[in-house]
Image (cartoon, rainbow, N blue to C red; front, side, top):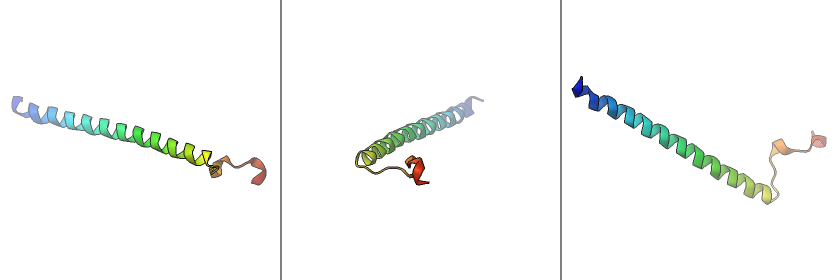
Length: 56
């Protein structure tokens, strides 16, 4: 079993690195999208979901 330990631990390590990388990328992208939305809303551009109820 000792000869396979490198591959097993390497696979777990690689999976952990990929999982952490995707998590961090998703978190950073979410922050960027929230900043973009804030900038658009500050410029007066509103989301369709934020329409007043009387315009339906």
